Image 1 (cartoon, each protein chain N blue to C red):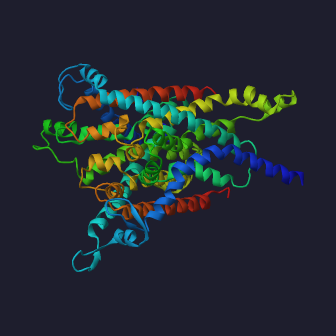
Image 2 (spheres, one colour; image 1 turned 90 degrees about the horizontal axis):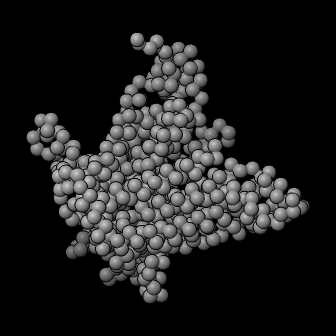
Image 3 (cartoon, each protein chain N blue to C red; image 1 turned 180 degrees about the horizontal axis):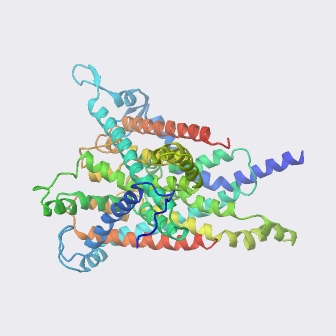
Length: 268
Length: 300
């Protein structure tokens, strides 16, 4: 029972094959990485039976515990700070028509997306190293500040998108009912905006959690985050412990992304 | 009159609300870039850092070297080969990601809406997954005892593992792998807006498949192609993690070379000059991109 051959204008010869191949190539290495995290043997490429031992090893490794705690602290601060300032900026740059300097604001906000990370990393190394000498402060503040800055565009974009999709009728109605601007914002705009804010905060969190280059250059001695710790480990003999850490991070990313998609999809 | 005042206050509120974000960005992103530009024209310090004396050495050493003994000037071949490798690998990465990215984006855009969301989600996961993890994943595949070599040997196609890791090929494979989603997403955005009736019209007018691809599809998808190419080319050119992990110490790209100047090389002015140069290249590509895309935009 062959289907009648319909000439489908949307298919191009070979495209489907290459697309499927691309998805296979994209996921095969990630799946391999995940599978070997459950390896009972010591090797990252010789299967020694199923085991959770490397998760136990990673869990009990003090350096990993430290780095994880540090990564989470930085990511929480960075996402809270960047989302707060990005929400304000998004409210300032949308819903009030065009104004002078708007393009300048856009360029500055999106600048971290355009400048190669290595250049920003080097710039921050130079800047913060002199600040460290001048103030004597060597804490996590530098990393939190740097992360907050490069997370801003990632927080800003979904919030701006959400604002642009909201019309002004609700706010106008609130104003007609004698709500003060603050009441309008607090009880009308903010609840409507919330999915965008949550989405922005999540993206900022992931971006901060994953950052390698800027962290590597800005961190002081003993301030490894999970990614910089892993980068350091790559120089040594590899064990599936790195796979286990990667898999855990991967699971966290997928979890956050799934929530992100559910939150942003609700609108439709 | 009142209109002008309204406009001014709109602008003032806009700026006021944006101020915290701008302060953070200027302090920890844009501002320090200026310091880099300044450092590139200062004299090198004894160990690291700089002396506050104006000097062209940083920029001079980007392309040239001076012999320690007889002071003769020659091209710094090592630097030139790093630039050449960076440009060559970045262009190759852009081409490979395009070859895979166009069919992939096309495939996603032509699925029914529900399935489309799932395929799109599948391309987004790698995009948001830690770059280091993805680089590490590809490393486990291509290493000598990795699954690729093991599979090829088990099939009897090769008798000894092919050395891929720590070569330019490894860096290329790795960059194409990690940057593919950056090509697919803008291409998808362009194709998604595409009116497929245009293809039908093309076929109705007796166009061949190739003619349809070249004269109907490509011109409409062009903004996506340009955006995708820029999005892949810029991070490729400034890549640091992928060449460091997959290229080993030898197959450096500009990013690693910059890091070297601030680490072992202890030549901050040279590192600063290289960073500024990289920044200028990116700036020029972005300006060209804006020009080209605004010229192509039928709405102005």
